[in-house]
Image (cartoon, rainbow, N blue to C red; front, top):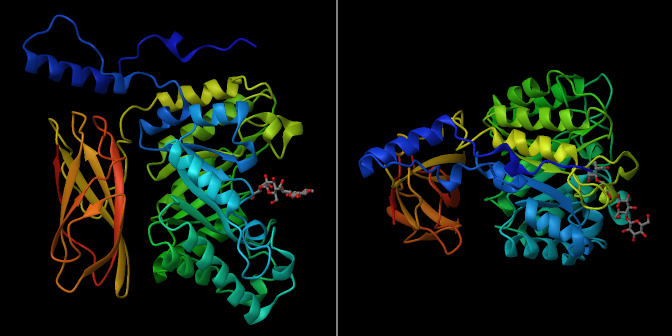
Length: 457
Ligand code: G3I
């Protein structure tokens, strides 16, 4: 099969690149040659291309696949992974209170070693329950569920970008209601209990509801939409909705509009299990899904459900971006081109809780988004570099009186109350021009309300 390389588009100079080059030129007093900064060249891998707009591009994998060609492609192309099976209830708690994290730990270690983030999939689901859980009901099942979430999310605490806390709890068909299951029969509040339990176990992870057949505005997606709206109005800690996107040969024309209506509720949206039946439309459907995500500021990343066609649960449909020989398919190229069509952080990223002015001329800025509840909060801080790459940063945050920090991730805190300086750790000090990184902290009391100051080094 003949594939265009990413380089045969030639150098791409986009308006932003030109502005930067002109600004640099002015500073240097009329250079004769304008060279586009490398950060703005078309990226040649999915992960790097997605990172240009602050998104991730991930793949589902299994620890037994972390070798040979699968691992070569995974490590080269993707900057996020999700466990296809090894973090599910049957895999992690095969006997009640007997936990097995072997596969999940291997995946997390692989991700850390290769600079990837990890999606956690899935804490509770009516399927893939171990036999002992299938036989439980009522209070015993509810207690087993909260214990499972506490232990599993607690084990991986600080290592998971987003957890699918609850998977596939809504019914297919026209009703828009919940799916019957042993969990549902413990009471309609089981989903919010699951989210509250997950927040307590890993306050730094984004907490997602994840489902399929939600690829447009339909009865099922509307049922989920109503649940998310209700959760947001009552302070149930939900941060994101996953759209699995196991697609056939057509794509609903309101795919993007559906993502947007969820984003408008104040949650992130993620494409979590994308695969598309092979057919004449495969490349264009992949491209449309990618462009839909790019067009929705709160669509923070895309995950494909496997690497090569022969790795897939739908292998008869050849639904992935690489063929069984590891070759890039036309769908790969369409996704890469779409990702490369957006340069720099998404200009439509929604305003965080505090909005700093856009950085100009080097330096950095920081903005905070808060998840608060009565007596506590989790703060996620986005550090954005200005027009120059930075090698380190310190963010100064003023905490209200009575507030105390109880945990910090991806940064080193100078103290736990009053004015606290958060310095980068070894792996996240370097941020490219216009790029960003995140750290977070949790605490008791009230979260910070002012705009933090960021100092670059
Ligand atoms: O590990 C056992 C093995 O010991 C046994 O010999 C073999 C015999 O069938 O089964 C193996 O388990 C299989 C497991 O995958 C690991 O390979 C299960 O039977 C099989 O049902 C399971 O399928 C997974 C399925 O979820 C159910 O958990 C698929 O790989 C996985 O792609 C699929 O993923 C789901 C998402 O979690 C949720 N959304 C839909 C998506 C596709 O169904």
